[in-house]
Length: 487
View 1 (cartoon, rainbow, N blue to C red):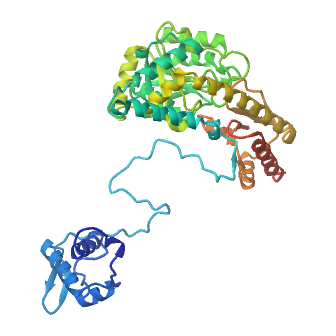
View 2 (view 1 turned 90 degrees about the vertical axis):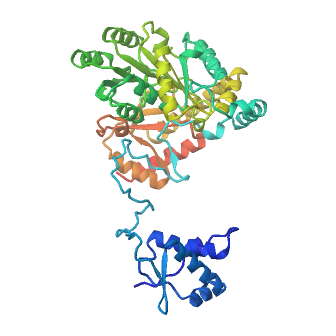
View 3 (view 1 turned 120 degrees about the vertical axis):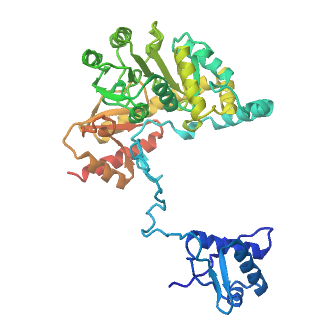
């Protein structure tokens, strides 16, 4: 039998007497199973010598353990872990590689897909449509936060309206009326912790298990997961250069009852296609005819580079069919987790009730700070600066692709958004290309990640917003090096 040694890290420092701390440390080893029932403890002199403490301290600790029932002292034989304790069975298997443990009860498999791999900082990740975190207006955010907490900390740091901070909803109304053409009031808006929460709450409010929901067959997997969590049965609809193929949706409606349609019409994720005006109007007609909800995710609305942006479907909705979902994450900072939904008030009330259950409310101080920044025009000025910056980065990426991967990638210049969707012209093993590129320090998005059926397709997604022109040049060069090794 292995010799027991006291885990000295358990001999905590503190104000309690040393004998009590020693007794606690030994009892912890008994609880954990390191000291098994019937195990003999070291003699008081031996343990005192090994710990560098007085023997009387050990005797007092043993006496305390005996009084609590952890040990039994047998004259002329020694002190033993009590035989009457429940047997602690230590796991037979080795710990998992990540240091985790297995629950002692059944746990369903997680509904979400595996998280995308996180590359080292040295890898230039071109796969996503993330903003550049280095350009976040952190000073303005910090000053606004300090101001509102200093002035109204007593009210902002307590419980508040789960629908969102009133002045922020007012400021969002002004923004949505002037830039989106939405005739909304504060009661039509629910502020959430990001657009993903907004979609999740809308799905919980509108869907019952088994309800049919049409989605873009090439689209946003986290949205599909939110809909599935609400019990939806998903039906993919094709996407082309004009966005969701509404004609295919109409065919689906003739044979399948749908409760909702989820889509990203402004900058379709991931293709960046803009849903054409005739399709938008036809979608509203179908929603009225078949009485389904339109879940409109207004992805990257602020970042348009050619003229005025197309107004949301919600701006033409006269029948109360649309739940409009937006976010300030790309505008300010993803970590702020600020999104919102606009819907008929009955829907907003239902979503607010679900929000109260899962989250109670948002961060009122953050919401108050952002409201001030919207009111004084800082957010709008920041958006204009970022739009110019991201346009120049889009053009820089296109120039590098035409220079270093000419004839390999074929794409249409996106009129907005933060990424580029490109067809790979020659037959290429995209998995190997990605692998070789990552070895050289560049990553990109494989098209199959965005397909509902996960079928491999000759497309890649390249984000440009989070990298400087110099970084984009280096990233494309590394992609070209990786591709050259496959030939």
